[in-house]
Length: 156
Image (cartoon, rainbow, N blue to C red; front, side, top):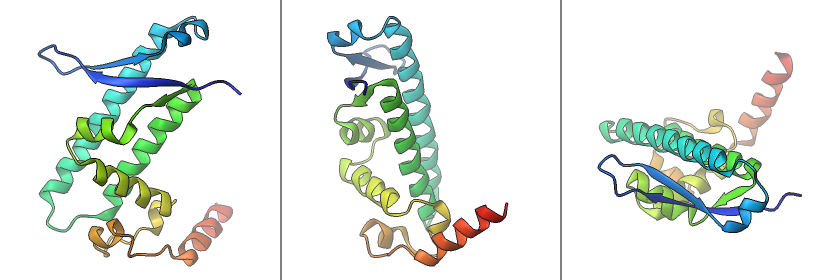
């Protein structure tokens, strides 16, 4: 199994906000194209942050917040972290870093990620149930919706 190396994401001092990815010097020995890899990770992170900010902007305009949008936030973050892992890296202080860049609290990120972990399929999230109930872990996963979903995929 390939060792995983830590990455840190910083914000540049330039007028245009850019993200800078850094890693340990040990990584130089494992990758011939380190700069290319880090540049890809920077771009991928920028796309992640832009997508999350768009979702949060939509949520801020809604009186009743659709919990599926919070599920999407968690899913986007999970997929980004999976891509990092596939490349042999992990994000240091991931909740703190992401919360800084999308300007929500670290505890909100933790709750969104816990929510996403409890509900593996977006179809198992009921948009009629308030986000606050999901956030506080007061909604349990309906096993029937997962069984129904699995049956539907088998028929396709």
